Image (cartoon, rainbow, N blue to C red; front, side, top):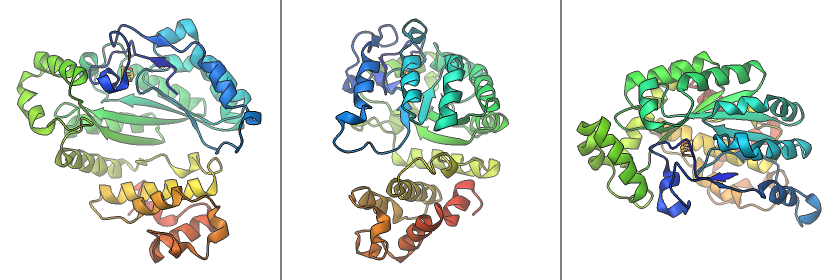
Length: 350
Ligand code: SF4
């Protein structure tokens, strides 16, 4: 859910600034408030209005174009009202924010966690204070975010770090990555998900490069070498590969899951979705190790299935992309709810 459009946090790299998201006004200054969001959500969650039941899963209260706990939330309280409704409807919630204001709602979060489940994830480009001051001018400092994570962990909630975007040649150095993962380990995060930065041509790229020119003029040329104007603003695949390799090595050292661990979604997802998620995770983890993987395509095939996998468990190999190895994993998940190979790979044990 994007409850707000536009964001006073005004992160320099934010792609909410890109033209393709159609955020009106001056990004960083103007914020649209979806004052009827809670009413619309109430209608969407009203089971009597649905022909088919909703698939079980987390409701992601995040914000690609606006943090749900940015300063206007103090005035409008829409995120709090949303959580109240989700709590009544007993939906699991995953929050993604950069704001310490989330701790205001600890009562509701605990209530939801008791009946369903809550994950609170914080996004960081690193835990370096001076870099954050340049690139995240309106956001609570990394130290404040870490303290809030420690508080939420202490209150029994699951917490994750979205290490994204990692800023090329600035927060992707071994030292900064190491410090960030170390700091996350210190507060007991349940997982860290890493993502590289995109720079879409137009407002987002221009805004970012102006700040880069001011603080890191020597890096302009290097940015030109990796951001070559792809449609989605991606850097070169070679650059992302190197970043993920460094991340992978450090994460194995600290034994932190690189994806949301199954304990947090088992019992929440349908059996089909559970298998799709596990296969997608396997695909990601193997590719991190530079290996080829059949699991991404298998997950895609299964995600289009309309029947429960348990009803066709002896015909799995007739599904496109499912060979004998994938079949074995699916059978194990159907029997036990997980796969040992997957669990060991996730923890970096193999
Ligand atoms: S907090 Fe998120 S949505 Fe807000 S400006 Fe920063 S990156 Fe964009």
